[in-house]
Image 1 (cartoon, rainbow, N blue to C red):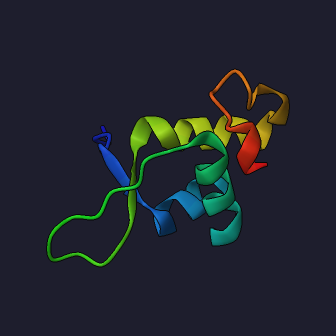
Image 2: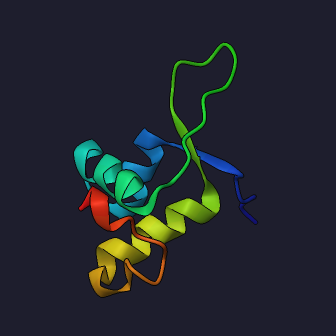
Length: 74
């Protein structure tokens, strides 16, 4: 059984949602998702629950507002 992670790097998110870095960052901005950096690690991470939000918005763009999309970011 695979253990679920708490945080995913942007590179991992790209693979999970099947989109490039720019699209991932655009969705992060659109949804107002908080990014995280950890000591001694240069990568940027987001919470696992937020990965699911990004995946949902990519698959169903009409759900963006329900997921807290920032209309000014669009």
